[in-house]
Length: 406
Image (cartoon, rainbow, N blue to C red):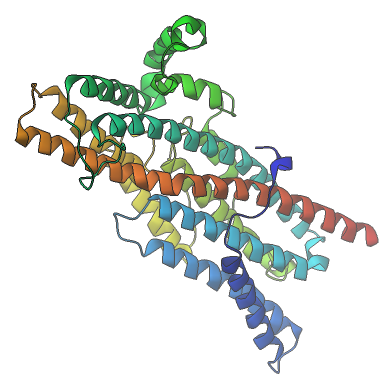
C-alpha cells in the first residue's frame, strides 16, 4: 500500500468535522472564561480525553451479536481517524512545547509506533482480499443452488435442483472450508493444493473456470507482507515501552504527554482489534494492554479488550482464521449446508428441497452482508494507512522547521 496511492479520504467528513468543531467549541468556552491561557490549555487536553472516552463508550455499548461485525469494525476505524485528527490539532496548537525535550522524544516514539502499524494495515488489506476470494466461492454456491438469477430467495422462479448443481456447489464448499482453515493448521494442505492447481499446472488451470481455483492459490499471489512476518510480533513492537506517563514528564510537558500516551493506547488497541477480526499471519492475540484506572476512557477500552479475548476463547472460535462476525456466519452456514448435502438422495423430496433452499437463503444473507461491507472497510483501512503516513510526514516537517527557527 504505497503512500503515493493516496486518493483522498474515505471517512465521512461530517464525522471528523463534528469532532473538530466540538473541540474548537470547547476551546472557545475556555477562552471566554476569566482564567488565563493555562485554563484554555487544560480544557483542550481534557476535551480530547472526553472525546476519546465518549467514542469508546459508544463502541462498547453494542450487543454481543454486533461486536466485531463489519459495521462495528468500520466504526472502530472511524474512531481512530477522528482521534488522530484531534491529536494533530493539539500538537499544532502546542508546537513550541512539542519541539522541546522530553516531548520531542515522546512524539518521535509515537511516530515510530505508527510506522509499525503500517505493516498491520497492509496485512489486514490482504486479509480482506482473502475474504473476497471466499466470497467468490460463496457466489458459486449461490449460483448453483439459487434461482435462475443466482439469488438466494424465493421471490423468483425456482429451478429444479439436480445432482450437477450439487456437485458444483460441493466443490466450492470444500475449497472454501480448506481456505478458511487457520494458516498454522493448513499449511501442508494448501501447499499440496498449490502444487496441484497453481502456476505449475497451467494446462489444467487455464481450461477451468478461474472461480474454482483453491484459496491457497489466491493467497499465495496476494500477500504483500513477507511469509516470515508475524502480526503477533508486530503488535508487541507497537506496544513496546508504551508506559504510563511519569509525574515528572506530565509536569515537564505541561500535560501534553497525556494525549501522546492516549493515542498510543488507541493505536495499539485498534491494530489489535483488526488483527483479531481479519485473517492475517500469526494472529496471536495475547498482547497485554494495561491502562491505569484513572483515565476516562480506560473502562470501555479494557472492557472491549476483555470481550474480544473472551470471544476468541469460545469453543467454536478458538481455531478461527478471524473473529469477524460475518466470517463466523459464513463458516456456520457453509458447514450446515455441506452437512445437509452429504445426506441427500436424488431425486430430492419436497421436504429436503425446502431445507436446502432455506440454507441457501441464509448463505445469501451472509453474502449480501459481505458484499455491502467489505469494499468500504478496505477503503477505510487504506485511509488509515495514508492518514498515518501523512500525519507523520507533516508532523516531522512542521516540528523540524520549528526546531530550526530556534
